Length: 271
Image (tube, rainbow, N blue to C red; front, side, top):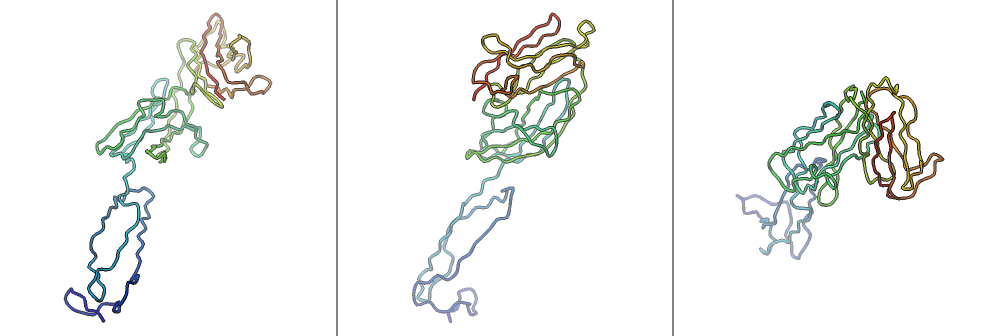
């Protein structure tokens, strides 16, 4: 048997007269949050063959496992005619930025409503070990509606890590005037959300017409026609005409009319 060099005693391995694989070790980190901060480097292990030559060691793995984005707060708060999302990161590693997702139900399908790719306020801090605060305002809401939100941080490899959900109920507000807000997203495919506001107007009794026109001025889709309650409203357009046919890519015009009030917004459908 071979004796060790650490105070006497008999080692568990027999003498080795040729190069042999003594053992293999596998280290598994069961950590879905990837916050183990594991790192290693190769050094002499102290093992040796019977003739005093060092044993061969091979270490494989990812090495330094990066910390993900560490959130310390994530809230949704109704304010006037919008819902304000706020979150704080304690640290960030390889963070390109954030995406915001919304649903009408906690366990429903979430749709992206904003991205760091087109919203500068959502661009990430890359690598940061100081606290950073982020804010996003969702103005495409309906009176009294409850909305659920998730955010996803996106790293340099495109990997998304989701946080949330949190929820908030939109306030019941009566606008002071008619308004047609820009649709979101724009450009869009396959659908876009449209917000319009209706005041208490006895003269028109809430009768409005909301329609889509092509670039030749021809009406292709009627979205709302008739009386609606005063308040903030949202509707979706799926890029189809009144017959259900898909419209081609191009510029379309959204037109709201209520009595003498007329307002138009430009939209871009991209197939």
